[in-house]
Image 1 (cartoon, rainbow over the protein chains, first blue to last red):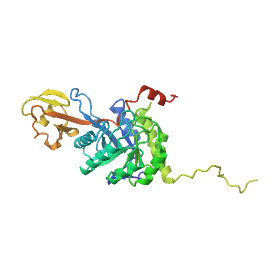
Image 2: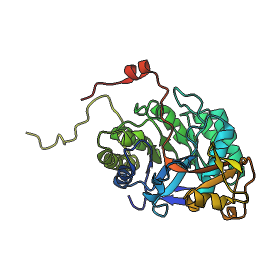
Image 3: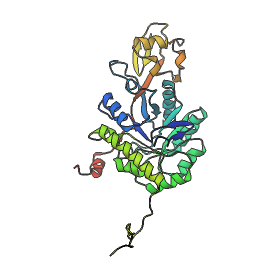
Image 4: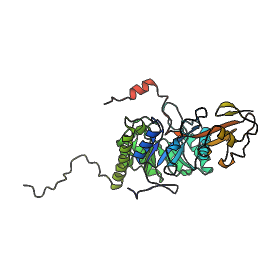
Length: 257
Length: 86
């Protein structure tokens, strides 16, 4: 698998499993789970520093930015203005032009506001950002995002944190055929088979947070996800057999008594 | 003079720079971004940027997060979506 690199906007990534850093018990568990996952891209949220309690440790004390590509996201932003502001702050705090752009449309579903997403992406691309947009499983929106200059698209599998798995594999398949940039399935994965399925469909990577952090044993689940993504990728590249309604014998008839 | 830091009022000496404020708060400058009155500062400019009475300062950094949690899902929704545990 080591020569099967994912390349986005000229940057190479070793792992096709990307992980979020939220919802863990503590930073030690975060670090251990990320190590077990083998991921080299980790998403982080942009928030106010706690100035009243300075004893709180910093996430980056546990995740070496030299070892991991830190990917700031605009989680929690419901307007174009907020998303652009958080993206700019994330770039100012870090060392990278990469941003996982989210413009959330609705609190209940956390589905993306795709009109706002396209608008925010246009502004940030003009400012030199490498915009990785979190979007719906909508092939038309995916194409629009690529047309305005997004070097990858991140369609959801199901609502964020829902663990419902891939609700619409056919739309993902159409997205994969429609746009020629890397597709990173983001959000909704519940367990290892969901991740494997995403990769078997031809996704270039999978990003998840809750499926690992929310598992009874997050570190073990992180390892399971690593194998699932690798297995799904290999199966996709190997090419699965066609589905048939009836049996095809796998042992020869010749030589039978 | 009074300024606002991350939404809270704070008394600082006249002539305080952004770098002084970070030092006072024991915050390492390499891991944060600073916004003063909605203008994002260059990291190299913290020592030069003097603060004025009434300035609104935001000091931000990275925290754990993947995407926003679906906190607003109602109790009924959760119940409807919950599958039996093993």
